[in-house]
Image (cartoon, rainbow, N blue to C red; front, top):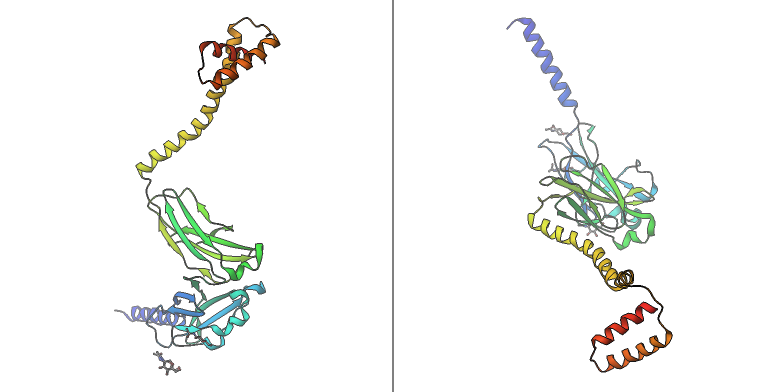
Length: 292
Ligand SMILES: *[C@@H]1O[C@H](CO)[C@@H](O)[C@H](O)[C@H]1NC(C)=O
Ligand SMILES: *[C@@H]1O[C@H](CO)[C@@H](O)[C@H](O)[C@H]1NC(C)=O
Ligand SMILES: *[C@@H]1O[C@H](CO)[C@@H](O)[C@H](O)[C@H]1NC(C)=O
């Protein structure tokens, strides 16, 4: 190894350690918020890492204004009781996150999510069917007091991707045209006048099942139903009303004397009450119909 090569390696090593030592600590993982308790898991085995829980009062509409939770500042444990900020959180609406600190360097803030739901975090259910995913929403009483300005923003996408696509809804929503065998995820956050408020639900994921040949036959049976619904009245209409017209077309038309109509209806009454219809009656009633 020449001196130049050694020098080069030394410079590389020096540069690498410099970069490494200046890298901020790894992001905290699994940041959860339930029952006014924030919990997380450390990303690395690094020593001397501390964590700070931060919050943003949702209804201020200034979602970039984050403050430290005083009792959870630069702590060396992995959970913190944030009951203190409850008073500031209208209907429990507050956004929370955790950041790691080490050697004076700070990681990005990782937003907390809620598994159990609370007055300002939706509780979400997912159900997967061939081709689509239904997100079941249920509204909690806390935020519901704010009325119809409250919506639920459903973020969805494939597992592993950032859930950026979203749709606002007040009731449950189905996401269509999804590929069988793929795993899709959704999370939901309340919005107030289109601003996200409160902690979002944690991602929930489901695999889209393949379409079952059994359900196909059921589907095609159901496809026949509308056809029958249309066909039956048409046939019935032709049978009941056009039969008369068809007969008219086939017979020379003539006007019935009124007296005969009277007689015919009397006859019909008598015949029906005795429950013994005859050939003759059929002829008369059909004539009566034609005369009207
Ligand atoms: C941790 O920090 C303390 C003082 O802040 C320092 O004395 C100690 O050497 C650090 N430990 C490591 C492993 O960096
Ligand atoms: C946390 O910090 C305290 C001092 O602030 C120290 O006594 C304790 O050992 C630390 N715990 C861990 C797990 O590092
Ligand atoms: C959190 O702190 C409050 C008081 O500040 C206390 O009433 C509550 O029980 C604590 N919660 C937990 C889970 O320790």
